[in-house]
Structures are given as structure tokens and as C-alpha cells.
Length: 130
Image 1: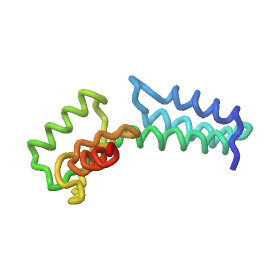
Image 2 (image 1 turned 60 degrees about the horizontal axis):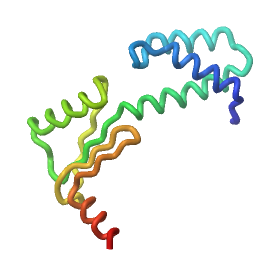
Image 3 (image 1 turned 60 degrees about the vertical axis):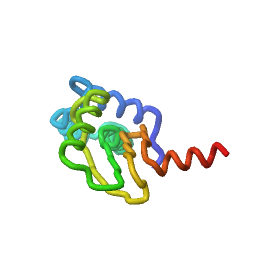
Image 4 (image 1 turned 180 degrees about the vertical axis):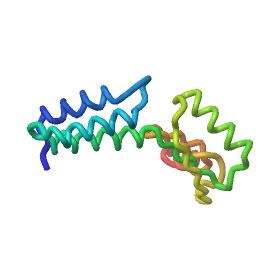
């Protein structure tokens, strides 16, 4: 479904109104969606689709995936979490994965930002340099 420019602009406006302190407020978002469903303004389905996309992008931006070659102990997990909280703020959701292909180090993905400090990543960068 193609979403009109007006619906996209309306969705962005609603999304900004549903934020408090730079974070998405779920209660405000729920009220806004209920009001849209009840009032059914012109192209409300397009507005809801664009709003859904914005919410999905915000959730992905606040999701952190941390990959390591071996399972991290609690001390290292807390150190990584606190370091990322300083850089990106609180309210992040963390997912820890083990990936033996990394050989060592960490690979951290926060939204679209990727920090690759793994041995495999270093070897790949070295191979590309030659």
C-alpha cells in the first residue's frame, strides 16, 4: 500500500507528540491509535501504517545485540551494558549471543551502529587491505 505524503507527515507529527523526554511513551501512543481508530480521518490506514513503521524503527534503534565468541560472565556483561548506557542512554534492550566464528572479542550492534572488535573482523579488514 502506497502511503501519501500527508499521511506520512501526520504520522510523524503524532509520533513526535507521543514522545516524552526523547523516549516513546506507550500510553500516549495507545491513546493516539485509539483516537485514530475511533475518528477515522481521511487516509487513517495510511497514517497507522506510517506510524507502525516509525515505532518499529524506534524499537530497533533501542535494541542492542552483543555477540561474543564465548559466553560473557556477569562482570563483563555489566561493564558493556554500563558503557553503552553512557553512550546511548537508558532504556536499551539487550540481547547476548555467542558466535564461535568471531574467534575472540565482541561485535556490538546498536540500531544501525556496528562496533566490530572481534578477531574475525580484524582479520577480514587486514585481508581487504591486501
